[in-house]
Amino acid sequence: MTNNTCPICGNNTFSKVFDCKDHFVSGETFEIVECEKCKMRITKDFPAENEIGKYYETSDYISHSDTKKGIVNAVYHRVRKLMLRKKAGWIEENTGLRSGKLLDVGTGTGYFAAEMKARGWDVSVVEKNDSARRFAEKNFQLTAFPSIDDFVKKHAPEHPETFDVITLWHVLEHIENLNDTAYQLVTLLKTGGKLVIAVPNCNSYDALKYGNLWAAYDVPRHLWHFRKEQIEMLAGIHGLYMTDVKKMPFDAFYISMMSEKYSRKKFPFIRGMMSGSGGLFSSFSDVTKSSSLVYFLEKE
Ligand SMILES: [Zn+2]
Image 1: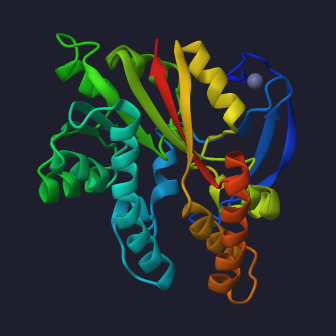
Image 2 (image 1 turned 60 degrees about the vertical axis):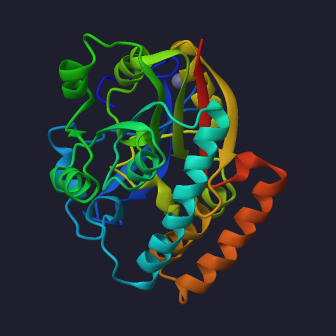
């Protein structure tokens, strides 16, 4: 947060929630603060876009490197396969379409985009990380752009408002200019098109259990920490309304295992599985207890 203004409600008074450590890369500590008006949680003084690159520099950052080492990563890859089919099913069910134009922003190594392409969708992708983008191009023959700006410049001027679906799977929490980006994306959508946003849920069972050790705070890479209420407000600002919310059932297991590792407890795998089960169980009766949520927003 560089200008001390809440991107959701414009308020400028915040209170400290707690300190969070970057367990993944730097070991540095960042403060999580909460907007006193809309309760949006923000990583205070997060690094600017031109400085944040070094906080992604680890071979363990799964979504970029496609690493398969370790039991946690092995589980992650197995689950990802299952989730690809689930995500594709959600998109087709929510839009009522079996093909159409889809833009996947922050595609990582491109597995979801490839799944949609294989199903007959006309898919474009944006990925900022060079090696992930090359992986997506080489392995799945996807046409990838390094930024939304670049994509808009090259493709959209003559074709605005042409997309049926734009997806951001665990991407929005990394994006510095939240409102500018939302505006750009909504401009690319058709009327009635869907913006599909998956983000960690800091009101989840596992978030409340682990507090500042909750792995999905993932400072300083995650700049924003959403609950359903803030996504609803953001949607309202940009002329979108929420038509559905789905839980990502497996995220609770991965995030809980990582949180157990950060807590330096013994048997993080077993403890994580137990805690993940608790999270999954509580999300059956209340979707907003799910570790991550997928929001389906329709352009009015
Ligand atoms: Zn606010």
